[in-house]
Amino acid sequence: MIENLPPVIDSCKVLFYADTSSDVEFTDRIDLHVGSLDGEFNRVREQPYLIIAEPYSNENEYLLMFCSSSWETVGVINFASLNEAKLKAEKGYKGISEKWRSSPFSEKEILNYLRDEYEVDPGSEWWKDDALSAKNHQN
Figure 1: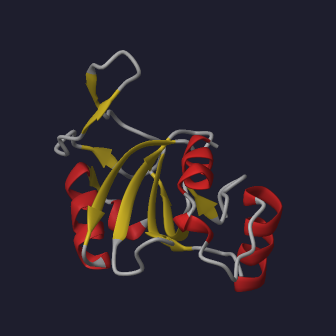
Figure 2: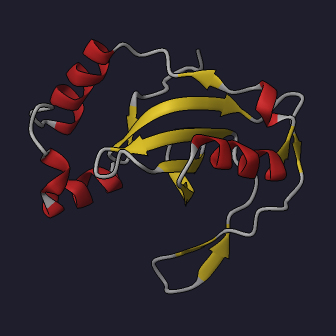
């Protein structure tokens, strides 16, 4: 397992993760731009980790998350299927298909993480609280 991988990132349950550093070629073929605090849009460049996650707010969606070395989300693309997310990742990171690993966390570990780090009742619909959701997107 990759060091310090959290089971939940930005209110999304981590399903798969991949390290882009070895035997993966960054092709720069994903044109993803994100807004910055100064109002400018910047292109997401090569990142050390990719995550495929499922948002708690929509279990019929898969997110391809581009993450920094500290697991901060730099950019996100949403998909209707897991396969679409993996195909898109392969377009930008040739060879990443062989690097995907399932999340190593048990359901109990995920629930404990939500209680301890997000300070929510995992049995509730905590993601519907806009203030809490905004706070957790910043963590």
